[in-house]
Length: 282
Length: 282
Image 1 (cartoon, rainbow over the protein chains, first blue to last red):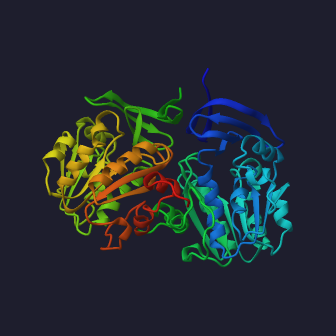
Image 2 (spheres, rainbow over the protein chains, first blue to last red; image 1 turned 90 degrees about the vertical axis):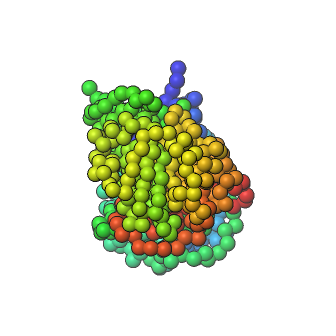
Image 3 (cartoon, each protein chain N blue to C red; image 1 turned 120 degrees about the horizontal axis):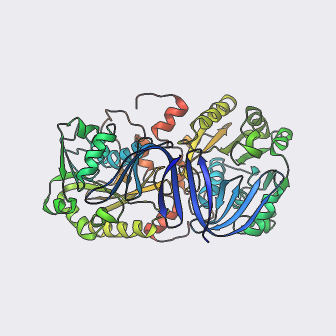
């Protein structure tokens, strides 16, 4: 009998892929978890019915959320990842020679354990106990509240703003993120699709703009996610991605990211500019 | 009872949207045709089970396939559109003041008639009998065979390379396209997704590279299409999009296109470069 997993990308839109096997189906303290071998995307992680990552396209997401902020910062030594339990963001962050420490705080230890078991390629840095990496199971919101003037780059690699990820999309959280960053620090968060989640994208952009002197949005192609057009919101205290020039040589190969993408990711279609900055005749 | 339309984006992947109404379901001489009001994408055209266009995202496709080649050419007077029966490409092309004539050749007159009836926003230039526009119902391949040294820009706005669109993805067709263009002409074709249709994208790129001195690929976000990551292949006799500088002022507003997109659309992620140019350590 053929088996399928589906995501309700919206109340009116489903993406469904055939799977050869469902390897794990269970509940953690926080969410429903499915690990399945899909015929389209390879092995997939599904949390609360939402496709989180897949072997086939995870590089597009993880390289976008990590390398763009880390190459914007001229000397990122201390990195904090909130969420990111699959380990993909940590894997990319430790590749930067400038990075001295990566602290990863995910609320759901079971996601971390399942990733180590089922996604060794993604959780590589965790599995291999990379000496730069510290993994903490805990509440990212509480962790952020305690941190002050410490991090160069913070990456909020969260799930959608329902369920455990909800508090990571709030004014107070962004205030604490600002406080946790050094005086030239910057943060980035995955913020869904500017095509499908217009209100969320606009609300977060306005909220971050209230707190950070520089707020920018960038996009990436992520086939697994609704509309395939995904965006990331960046708040920065000093460095503006629109003024970026190469500041050091990249010392490792990448599959999505390159120096052209570092700039072009911030070039927004007019309908996205209109959403963020108000409509003008363009 | 709830109603849905689905596209099998691959043998293993379905995209399904709820529809409030199916307005038309029939067969032309060439293909199955559905017009439906979807709750996610607004009104949609479906040909042979493949989602062709929707009210909500058609601007992303039509502006990408038209404005990028037309703004690359410094003085595009004569434009040919092969396919494009919905009229969206023609609508965008006639907006350029430099354009003197747009000839559109679609094999399926029924698609044109249904677009006039059900998609007046898209088929606007046809409906309003724009004086620059000539609409022909006929075989684009045969039409191209007869043309010589005449067009500045040719836009191949075709369906997938199965069914009536098949012959539009062939060496002979590209040879005829080269012949139909003036000595500084250029053409562009929609060529599916570099994430999902890797062999097709590579084969066409190599084929066009054999014929045209300059061959480039560019991408756009098209949520309705498989993976949301769509690409267009361009063959050009003289003008290189990588060397583009603004050559005239845009005189009309756009919703997707802007001068930043004209450049950034050609910035390719490494996995796409690797597909086209061979893998290197990046």
